[in-house]
Image (cartoon, rainbow, N blue to C red; front, top):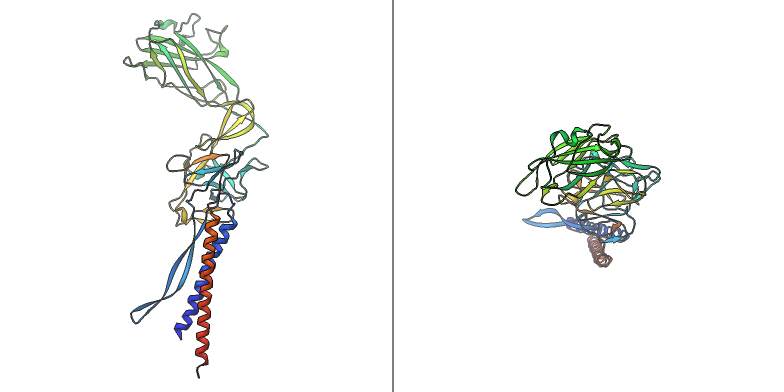
Length: 411
């Protein structure tokens, strides 16, 4: 009699398990067009009632659902620069209205009324402000793109590379540009434009003077303080640097970094490591500086490493954020929530975040969305199998019912 009742339990558990499978299949089909959706799969596990006479007999089945979180969906170009997809591992970090942190692959972001980038499910994209460390969730904030103001950033770093002619005449110490004397001499001169804290361009005069064999002096002045375009300047040099070169190959041996602060600006670190002293005329081969003049946002540019820059109406780029990519140790164990987002838990491991395209993290594709990983043909085929299995379990239930009826009718 107990075995007969066991038939009921087994068939009911079988129907319930197949119903779970059909529910996941239905969810997959319903989300076949959902951006960043990861296919749900159903895993069946046996249940054992116990042992009898040394034999083990079954008791049923139960299910576990998992999402193919690590699967890569097809990438589709959209033309909207704030639509984002990940090519490779990782997740975007997003937050809800309460500030709670979640992970997602759904990158259909657009600015809201406050300029915050929000996706179709209402989750806000998180990023690292320009200049902050990109290795901690606590450094992240909601990414904003505001068109109701002007943007200006001071210069904080740059690169200046030039060749200094090895045959140049040595300048006497009394006449070096660093003395700021009316009769100062120099071997070569260039200029450099940087930006102060208000985005105002500051033109700098850069002087090079040979002081001895393989030795030079570099001096930087504010050009606005020049007297009739030259010496003496009304202000002292912003920086003076001694440069030494390797006689064997002409590469810079010392003095490869110059630090100074322009008028009204921020401290600037200037990289000189590609400066050379060769048997060729003076020539500047590279000048780059960050910072920008004040301008309004015309468009948004997002690079594969996650750098979000504003394209300004003055033609310049203003770096604003670095969009980080998050990972966990066991992504398939993440908790799923409405809106195609995930939350970390004890099984998945804690969230660690960093820059895109390094450390095993995927690169970011702008103006692109990741499609669902659902294949409708596969889901429909799986649905037929699950439906047939459900029907078979109902037959088992019916057989158990008939057996019980026979037993009840025995006089």
